[in-house]
Length: 86
Image (cartoon, rainbow, N blue to C red; front, top):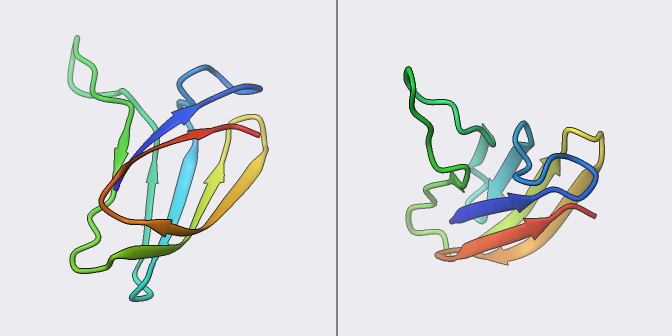
């Protein structure tokens, strides 16, 4: 799954948002939104999670820079997901 964050109270790209994902199999993964790369470069702000054979995600928890915590349940895998800060 590829997650794009859109901040409302936080910055527009959701830079700094911490994401916790719990896959259907119980695998837990963590990542955060950043564009940091090497010197004088930047990376795609979308966050990629590899799920293997899992067809669904039990839970995605987003902790936005504003302090807002947002939780999504039963999300389909194999998609580009855009999450807008609540």
